[in-house]
Image (cartoon, rainbow, N blue to C red; front, side, top):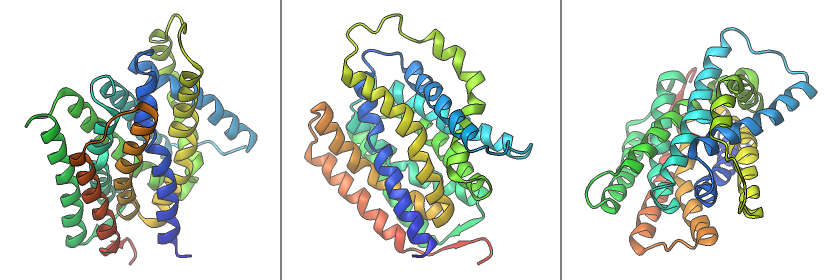
Length: 292
């Protein structure tokens, strides 16, 4: 199996896990501060990450790698979780899932600058088309304007794209699971205090479903899903594999209906189908990588 195909398959596996993040976040938003949801899950994940690094006796990151790991921290450990959790207080998870469809284009753009990839004009046209559909959807849902939650989701997109692309670049030297584990360990001194300050004083009324949801966010969304996601980006190329994220709205919509009982209207389904179609078009467009 070619590296590009392996990368796409691993990317799809990671996207499938990430696609449940917003609906599961929505479940616990009524009970927990969004900052605690975003940072508290990382605190829990950092303990598991540190254990894995110790048991496998991994080398410490180099001085050159630490600044890049801190970019990963900013993007996928602090920025995306906090902004997306806050947005889930104000919009349905299904709405957020579609808006996040712009993430592949943002990741591809960052990949061009740091990954030395050169997508073709056709690739950019298809990516822009898919992203334009996402923007159109947000405007239609917002009665012709972006609301504050959409702006938070866009901030989450930009930060996640940065964290994805830099993490994928580091994966080639460190390994995908090592990147996210070291990023979590490095983030701990910075996130533990705000996580404690925003932690709930009481968990009365917090159901078993709530505990399981938080565990999913900590161990899957914040940790294990990144193992396959970063490996996929490194193998198949940032620009190419990032397009797999356009499948994510489908997964989020299905999970929103299943877990939250959200009603998915016809317009939303049409937009999702059109956005997903752009994934397959984008996959066929040529992308040159460094050395080719």
